[in-house]
Length: 107
Image (cartoon, rainbow, N blue to C red):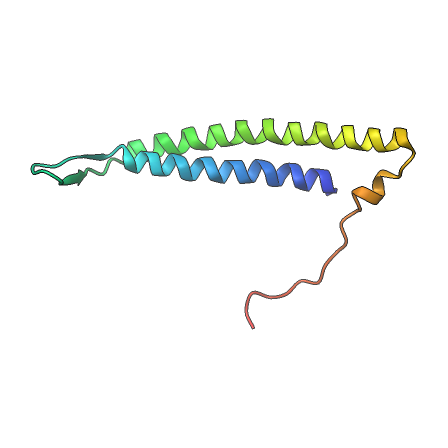
């Protein structure tokens, strides 16, 4: 997988997880209601609200991530073409990924 494909996937994944978390938080927030006394609040669990808001968050995250990644990809190609017009090698700005040593998660 090339640099631009990994970057595209990373942007979409970042927006996907961000909007999913926001969706889950808004689902839990929508279940909070005023309690019987002043300064008291009740949390009434409703799984359907969590599922709906998380689903909407996932859909929005995918949509916004693809749009953001497409904008990044367009600017990437503009930079490559601008460098080619000047006579510079675009590979000097966007080097291919070098494999790195993998380290285990445990000592």
